[in-house]
Amino acid sequence: LKADTWGQNFSTINNIIKQHFINSKFVADTASYNLPYVDDFISHYPNVKFIILKRNKIDTVKSFMYKTHNRNHWQTHDGIKYNRCRWDKSFPDFKAKNKQHAIELYWEMYYDLCSKINHDQCFYINTTDLNNESTCIKMLQWCGFTNPIYKKIHTNERR
Image (tube, rainbow, N blue to C red; front, side, top):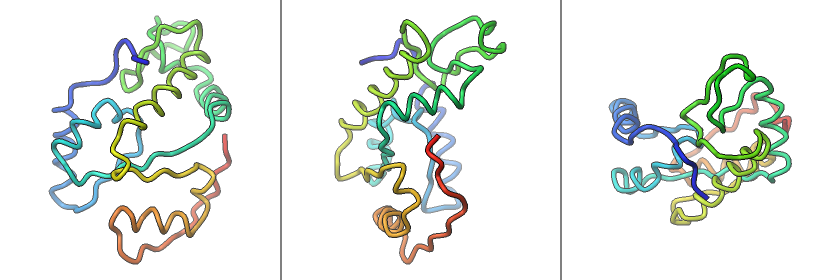
């Protein structure tokens, strides 16, 4: 699978990352829009680690359809049908029959790209396990945090 267009060039993202590294050993970004740059991250930061959230396709598509009711981030459009919100270049642009189909293609692309990352650099976690203290502690330790503290702020509602 390949999106027709996706993202910016890596130097823009790398400059943002460098600014964060000035004062911190750890930098985190929870966004799938970084996926096109995995190889760039690895070549510039060989110790980089990726946390891959796992969720089934049906629940993921349903969630995106619910949360982006008046927006379509997965297809180029004129902004009229979707509240004057044009396609967001942080997401891939799919030539799909409709928004739901584009989100399905996005889900497939996400896991296809994740499967190509060196598994030593990945920690896979089910979204439902984000509410599990021992799993989250294990994930944070894998990232390099010593004696992490787990604080439950809210429960993942699976939307």
